[in-house]
Image (tube, rainbow, N blue to C red; front, side):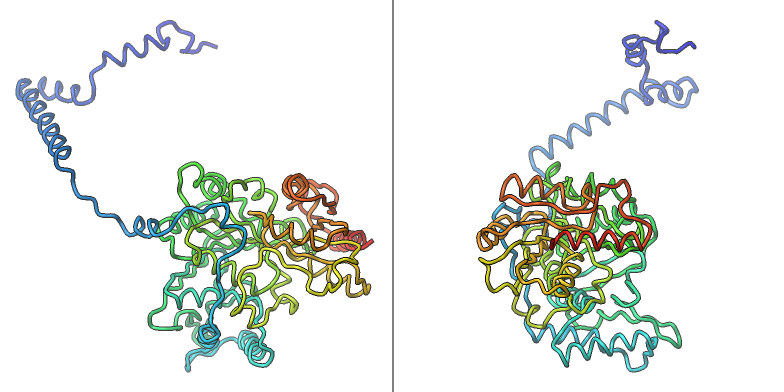
Length: 475
């Protein structure tokens, strides 16, 4: 087969020479007008000379007297923030709120317009949340999330959220927007907290993760004081936006010095529902982590989720947040939090085992993150085991090194074991092996066997695997 590249007439130097001798479009057009008798050639040259002289005069003028520059609003907002330092990640900023503000927001999100009639199932959910709050001083996961948004709105921040079916969330979860059972009118529960509040925007977006996340990343860049969130319907839906995650979210600060506070909420947890409903691919995000470039969290309580969301705009620098969100834990009473956890605490990177009174007499410390904590806790309680502590790693990156080291000293002599639901080639396994084992202290690892699939598709096999995992953790 003959290729033009093999023809001597089309060698690269010859091609460059042809291009170099070819007239540019202006010259071609000028010649065409001249040949047609439309423009005199001398006039064309004179017009060109006047044009270039005019450009030079303007350039000289600007050099001698620079034009004033007025900073745009996004530039002013970013100028008020700073770059982070390694010392910023030893503990979180204060994100607690006053009881007065918490109650004000709670009342606002639980109060419906007089002429609004919600669906009966929704009204039942609201009644249960009200009872929980007033009778037990307890806040469930969904309410804790809305309180995070509401308190930020009350402080003057805007909140923006998009994703598949985010207005409702799950059947028993967010319900940020309600629909009237009679006339289908909408009610935004976060729109009537105060007259001076920020704006709450929430959109059910298309299954076009690349486009949606790209837009939201840009919005967060233009509005650094707005909490901007994208939620995946299932965690692995973020696969469709991997280009945005790799090229911008994880690396823009290092490549271009551009910070961003974008939040991704990715449902994650092994519940026997198959590969596509289990894993948000935590390992992929952790492989992108270095130089404190983004937060990776896996919260286990309503209050800690409240605080990690508020931290995004409360601190005076910006980092992307990837939170691996629960599914079953949304309805789990053990994941609910007391009111005081919202008014007296801040985000906890590590949660110690408060039930262990004798730290010196322990056999083992199980370090874990996310949903499996409650499975471990249930097993320990059922088996009446008292000499094994369970510590929760709520923030995986930046790794809370000092806090982990303090706990290692506290439980000196006990065997440490990392326990995860994911197969050993997934989850936080390899990241922690590289960062804890090599740099902090010696720790063992327990996980499902390495697998090409994120999870089994059979509920019975899942239950068997989970049982073996729990037995091995305490064996």
